[in-house]
Image: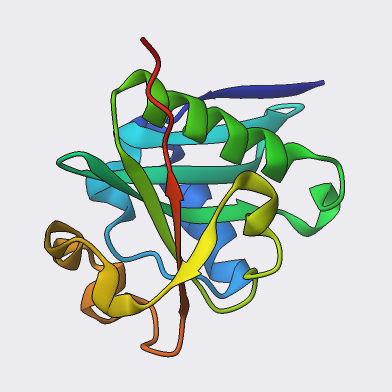
Length: 147
């Protein structure tokens, strides 16, 4: 059975291991772990995704699914829940950087934008300060606020 839950400090090592295996940056994850969701199957952490909050915007980052769980819908569930969380928190937009999944995120309403169109506050992120290559695709999704 798959369980989705908010990340806790003891999850950091497993999240970082998943990211390393997938070739994704780990920098900055520890600082934003309280805004991560993780998925567990039979006591093993098999997927993770998180938000970095910057004012009324968020950076969706570290969407990672173990090889054994790819194609099961767990990544979709994590992204969907984080979009719902962003709406519940009153955020206006979500952004992401990707080198491998630019074709995956449009199904959630993300569209490509120029890096120059990122809100200045997001430049504090480790991902924008070098953890993610300058060649990464930048995407944005406007968040529909809940009344």
